[in-house]
Image (cartoon, one colour):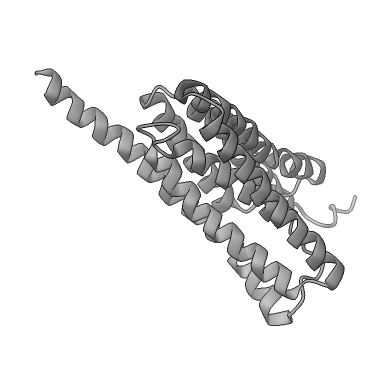
Length: 235
């Protein structure tokens, strides 16, 4: 088979992995919709925090910038997924600001301005101060740091599951989507030979797999415990 014949299947496989990652990420992006329906219905943010959406927005913007051809040619599917993610996170933040108390509203608006300020500074420095190779390394390192921080957040859930021996706060389908998204982009990064993609997503894959193992273990333990008699036999 000639080199042209080999290039087509390789491209299909790598793009297929990236498209799969986009689809699984979309499931994660829409998962907070029920929370924001509740906020809109009650016209109050109650005890919900807007910080996770601020962090997620900054992460999406950095990774979106990394995936653009002017920074990293050939990984446009990283830009597409994060552009969609940024729109979702910005929408959630706007809803939060609308229904938050005045003090929370001011804080969230200030953080939103700061996020766009940081992103603007990253774009300015990478375009005007760095050559193409250094630009990719600079933005790539920022995206890796941002993704690792995002993937580290499940560690708190994992710790909670182990302490409480309950999977109540770790929905199965959310954990499965996280694992499959990370695995897809790990494969995409490996096929594209891009360490800035496969390293953080490799970490995300391991953490996602750990969540699934814990879910199976503790949900099974919970079922076995529920089958035990509440009162032992009399003697």
